[in-house]
Length: 481
Image (cartoon, rainbow, N blue to C red; front, top):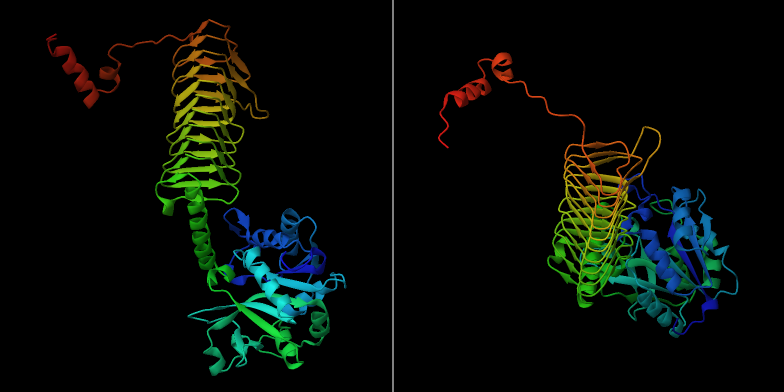
């Protein structure tokens, strides 16, 4: 951190709010943005500041939020806000956990996820250079409705922050608004916070009132204007969340394009922050990449695919399919309309075709499951070919069992493999066969039931129907061939 040693800084993250405007059972700060909860973004930013200590204040759905904090910031201290409302009270409680040798405290909101550590670092540098008591970020809004207004003297020094509900008509006309991000000297906070009151329109201890206290006591308060307002935009409802998601996704997509990824319709492609893409990957319209996806060079995904936690090898091709926690090796093909469930591994050159579902299955090198099949709890050997309409019956009502198809075996259409069962290397199975016992290598398995034909059945049992009439006509019409 420029101009500040790590031992002199602490960070407080405010995450106690109920977020009622989200209208959700999920706490607001846990709603995902590019695959990471809002609070995860903020905690990652806080970590980049290299603070001596990070304190997170929670209250609403405290247990869920605390679990997320533990996931994204192992060393953060969690403080539970009491029944006294307001951001001022939250910071007051957090300060009790911050060592007295800390010089400055950065205060962040858990619902402002796009603010980066570079912008915060610039604020801290200005704060130190100006020897200010408090420095905050502000921005200019064409429509400042809902935000606290920044009140300045003629020389630019900040004298107060007035919340909209407490502002008069002249103050509401101000377009510079508080971004809710601060750095303040710890000793100043320790002196000012206990004296805050709830004597305001919302009956809360406002953190913003600290600014007025410092200003009236000959302290210096500065506001650093952030030109890009979206950096300090908060999330209060799902409309704002979607707008932020769109902006962040546009940045992610452009970043990958600059790194050598072809994205044919950027407005229709969604990529989580945790996704990794190699050069010369092609993403066609309607692609969503979630979680820990890693796509190797030259692979083509899309159109209309959703991949979650998938590993895709070089030159693989996936179209109009859903892939969840599966591995697709180099040169393999998937789809259209395939569903690869967790535990699926398609080896090099393998194929899972149209309307095929796989689960906990290994498809060998060059093996094919081309059409209309369910392959679950199975091992398909190298070079094997599974006929259309095949099913591995893997569940006996209590336990799952495995099907093994040997290398270069060829199974007929409409086969059912009743697991546990094995088909040996190079074996064949006839169409319509139910395989209940192991088939030796090189053997042919044929269902023992022969077809029985009852001549004239339609005319006897369905007289007067179109079928009966067609059958009768076929008998009386001379064969011209």
